[in-house]
Length: 544
Image 1: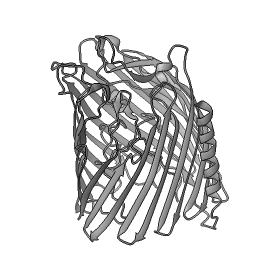
Image 2: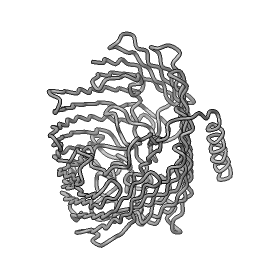
Image 3: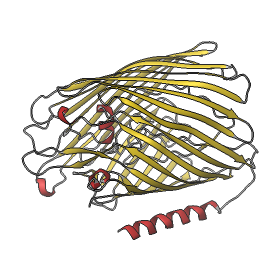
């Protein structure tokens, strides 16, 4: 299988390079691109729409920026359920001028349902209140060795955030609530498994980018509770306290010095689990000129409580804009990932096999280095080629364990997980008629002998292709394909051919439909949990 995978990877990169030569036109001088490398939750999607979860993590496309790299002061959203195991099939709004306020409803076969609400209040020019809610899930019978067992997963999310803008600062507050109700494989006396999450946060940040001093500070509390794990109401929970902030100073428009600070304390209501904390200090220096963008920093992680210790990782980036159209970049990052309830659920919602007597170590990303080349070849055509290497200590992996009397649906395994990564991505758009995107990522993993199970959930080759066509001003058609293979084990590769359509019947009303797994391929969302066969969802969107 390995030669075939490498052949596919090389073919995908060749196709991307060929795509980049289709069109080359002149454009403005300042069109450099920025790229963000997110270390935490490496293999999990970032949910930007409350009612949409992709089957696999989306590729984050670089965007053209007209200004220099700015100090990251944006307050991140509260932690929510982030996973790629159980997807909703509701498409996101595709109309270019979709407003911030909408209601979306959909229903399909296999018990698929999707509903979403988002409303943006603007009481004044200085105030903004956004409210959103979403409900989605499925209930179907996969068949196979478990007979008439029905796989069920439903999720509810709700949240609100408020911001008030002062002359040179912004004050913000937000709250969130979420539930998951689902069932494990039919190994227990009950199928009432549930997860509950919620939290609140407040923060303040500077908004005047021209001032020498820049700052941000945010404090929050997150809650994660779970129940009915193995047949009884074995409820347990985690309360996580967070404080994040940063302060920087620039004597001129070229040089800036700063310090980022992050504190986290995880408290468990579960016998056998010890509380733990993490303090991260990141001093940095940044230099921004027309010829170079440089950031030199270091992450110093101080772990307290369980798994106490000290860890250090780089925080370095360097960009060279060339001719206003190309960018060479090098980045090196890392840091500590706390293996708590939130990260477990990000890997898979079926982590019931975790118990207090087998508390795992925190994962330390010793190095996540990448070097690449970006080419903004035209107004509607760009190319990104990159390669890198990653060193992970005590990385977390999971695999099914369904045999014997133990009946644990999942077990965690830890160990070294180093990987060489190669990637390429390209997009092309012709007016408002056709949009093409293609991305391919390949990883070659290595671990210690005897720990091959650690790599059963790690992606090896990940390819995605999408084409959007607008034959009419009111109609948008989509066709896409996603392929993902895994580094170890006999797990079938994800092979999802999907299609969708969105038709704007009225200015405020649209009808949409989406079908997935058109090839009726046999694969798993997560190890031991089968995907649906060919399925569809139809619905309507109301815009206001």
